Length: 408
Image 1 (cartoon, rainbow, N blue to C red):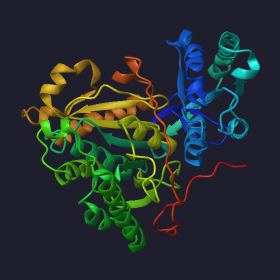
Image 2: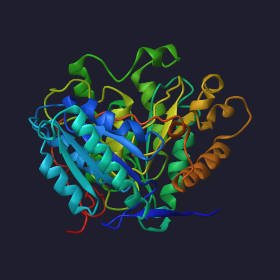
Image 3: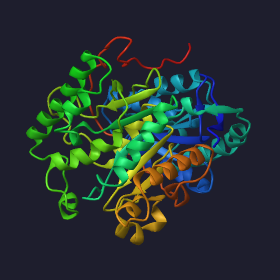
């Protein structure tokens, strides 16, 4: 079994598993223009991302900057209207400093929709050949960052797909890779279990605090992270859903706590806290699964393991999404959108370990360039809103919460 792939080498030393040109709009007023710029390149590695808000947001800037300088991204076209609050010059400077080709188009200065679309398409056509010349080098498993999320969960999720992902996380961490699980609002009731796995007492306290914060946040909102579809699928309470979601983390020691935009300083298992700090100001922490995927990508995830029982068809821009279906009936209906049928465990056709071995091999294959179902179907969803976070607490060398800093 080979555990190395040929990665795309970036100027900061990181390596990507895809070589994507992204078009990033900086306000909803520029969304249509950016979408039209991307349209002729549907069969090429050109992805549309962006932030819809007109008002300033340090969180959105940090996340979008990290996505634009993600190791899977090779070049960036920034599209602005011109009067939004987003710091487009700062974003472009950060991208340029990372060694990536970057250009900025301001619609109000370019002469409107048609002129901007034409200019954007010209730049992409000129830049794509440059991406083809990006150097390749051997990428070892310890350089891989993998995230996991569950969506459309039902009573089968915690029995098959989620523990399968947990086993794969254990296999990856044992080989030096970095794994990130998230959604503290779906870990309510599991905080003591997580604390017992923390590498330091200080980190254990932070893990407990993050879940307690989520519980307070959802209490104010009056609605937990529990959808009608979860109940229709056989889940009874947020605690039951949490136990299933917790299975995705596996059994490895927890090395650190992250917030969106934090990039782990070393291999191991990390929890991503996605619930905003401070008072409830921006509504639900993540209004859809893709917002969580974007935050995982902002932490450097090369690819995402997405478990689903009810069935979800979404993918993502920038990072491939591997769909692990928990329910055999769902898999039968949505087989074209799924990559792995973990529901075979319920039918007695495979064990959890056998499906985990299959998923582990698929992770390596996708890292080596194999398309996932969502990639093949053209899914490139991207969702970014408003949030607020305090800086991640430092917990010392043993409990890693420090982040990667590219060389100056």
